[in-house]
Length: 313
Image 1: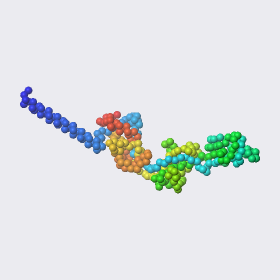
Image 2 (image 1 turned 135 degrees about the vertical axis):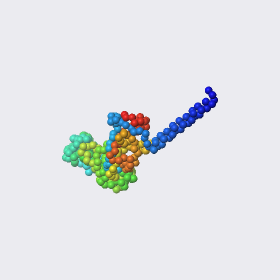
Image 3 (image 1 turned 120 degrees about the vertical axis):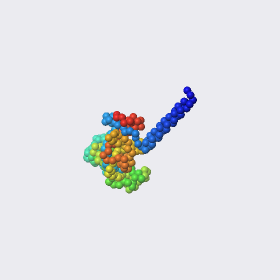
Image 4 (image 1 turned 180 degrees about the horizontal axis):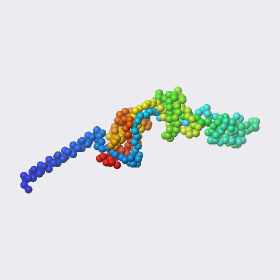
């Protein structure tokens, strides 16, 4: 082949290479720009069967009441006015014991018979109140004397919840505030603060906030540790969603919204919040459909690109 023929072919190949390279570089730059701006090249489409399979819950955006709370540790305690210590009147030998630990008693029930060491006459001990025996130190045949020997009877139909209030929260705690009492992370009952101590404990440097709870079913046991969520503020908000709806995509907080085409992440701005819910200031409007639970599945699929290209699944 002549040299003059090879030159045009060589030049054509070089020009083709550079034009092709430039085309792909521009395409990559455009894709990167869209990615940075938060644009999405496709919308994910899921059938209802897949939504159910993946545990994805779709709800309608609405408003509601948001309660802001302070979480405080606490303990169930006996009301001192509902606790009686029944002790022997005179030192003597225990002849009979009629009740045991954990038994329920009525006021006037016979607890024990004691023979006085001085008079050698017997006398009876009776319960001074309705309740349950929570402690006792009485054994048949032993010598009973105060204060070592007694029956402790407690009325547990009402109990105290004493919350430890840290110094930084004291200014936000007041009488009448609503408190949700949780046992093992489950809300067991709600009450109101009836007492706030005027001084701090010298060892823990905390104040005490007290709630009186009904306990007819005996689910609260003295000595039990609980958590109290004190409501310090509440308000009505036009857009309120659960925190489970929030996901992070490309460093932004998003919520997956469902429209007529499918699901897509929408950047949102959050406002007030508590442990469970969050106010949305911008990005969502009442009436929109959104993923309240399971958005992480959509996020994972979007990252893999498995549901891109407009394909239905």
